[in-house]
Image (tube, rainbow, N blue to C red; front, side, top):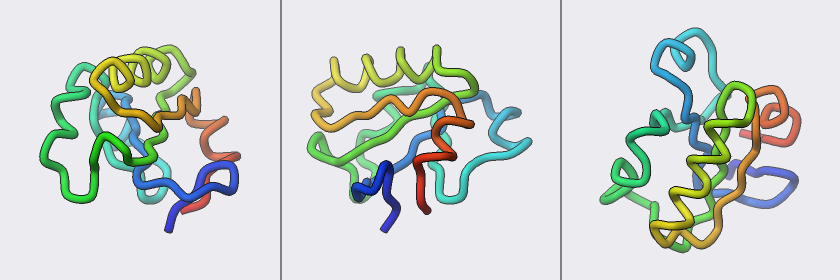
Length: 93
């Protein structure tokens, strides 16, 4: 099971553009561009409002907005990992 800062998570969500994701991403990251959240999580197997979600982007700005949008939609366990470099340091696939 993947973990972030030593705690199990249900999903690592990369909110960068498709091109950014295609050029390189963290193993096991789910790609959902920021503007598609939170709608794109609806109906995903294994994802509920209680799932432990971690979001990241390139530098931290988009992930902060994505985390706020998820919380506003009722997701209770969302962590903003900031940019991909910071996320890489704390994420274990």
